[in-house]
Length: 358
Image (cartoon, rainbow, N blue to C red; front, side, top):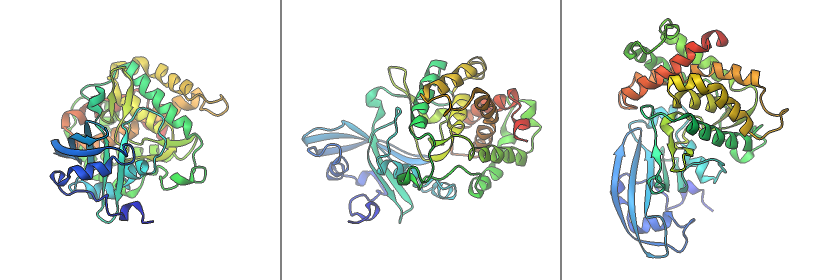
């Protein structure tokens, strides 16, 4: 049997318009084996950090989703993702039918296209469930963050104690590390991000050089190899979340999936998803709620002192990532990057993060 990436069907299209009804019939074959698509109409597409498209489907036999959402890599950003080690991670995660016990989009087909340095995901169109995608300009409420943390706790608890040997089928998932690939991009872009940031950054951040910001990022990432290890979403910022009508929070874009300490998801999500005032008021209760939602015996889960210490270290990660993003043109709108640098910067100052990582 040929490897999935050498099979004749799943070739990532260069143009969305080239996809016909038979292609979609095959794409849905695993979940809807009796369905036959008679018409597929492209209703929306864009080319940002990834190529995305939405199709409306009609059926001549059986039944299936009325619409699908497709995602592939943009050639403009392919080499950055390859350098960071992220190019194929999401497609491999879903191609392997990896259990993810939290709210996330259903994926019908996942193809890591190694020869072409590309991938393809065919997934549900979340708009059909009334999902509301969020970003930094539309932050979550404390209740919605609590829902997201409960989902992360379910994911983390399922893979608690994960090692390369304990989950051999996921041995390809890398341990978080401050790799040179990541640091090259950060050291290039953080200086521009600092120059573009305004008065929203506290004095504790404005006193730092760009290299010091990246050094603290690396120090924080280094801590993720110790303590309780699990499967991480890896990029759980508010822009990768959505809220469905029952106010449950879900997670999109699993392109940075990693193995490491649980705090990377929790700190990155909690600090960035709330306004600064809401975070200051609710962060302790939300962190305690996450620990309770793990559903693990006391002896297996982090103590409060350990959790609070790691949480106070965590803003160094988001601060560097979003200063770097603010230093780019085309990755994210500057308004979103500024809002997130403000939140991570405020938490960095509030919690004395630099001293904790010294």
